[in-house]
Image 1 (cartoon, rainbow, N blue to C red):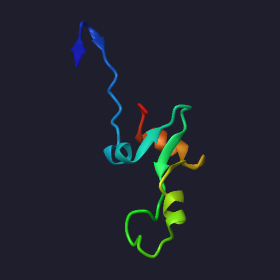
Image 2 (tube, helix red, strand yellow; image 1 turned 90 degrees about the vertical axis):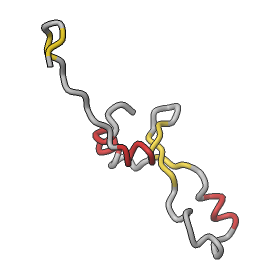
Image 3 (cartoon, one colour; image 1 turned 120 degrees about the vertical axis):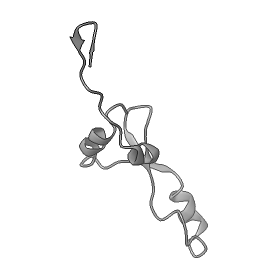
Image 4 (cartoon, helix red, strand yellow; image 1 turned 180 degrees about the vertical axis):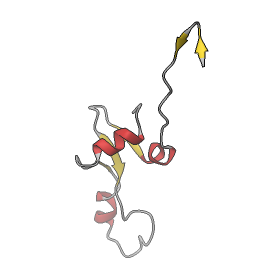
Length: 73
């Protein structure tokens, strides 16, 4: 569409599934939840569950793909 005679660039769409799973840290790193923490927790030790509770940084090889999925993160 044209507004005031100037063509506008299309907006980039965010992958909503990725947006719900990933966050940016204060320093700009992409953070994700750890795996193995959603079910079958009875047999896992308390220390293992505590260790898995935190967020971890996304692998450096995946960061470029994450930025494609989340252009405004």
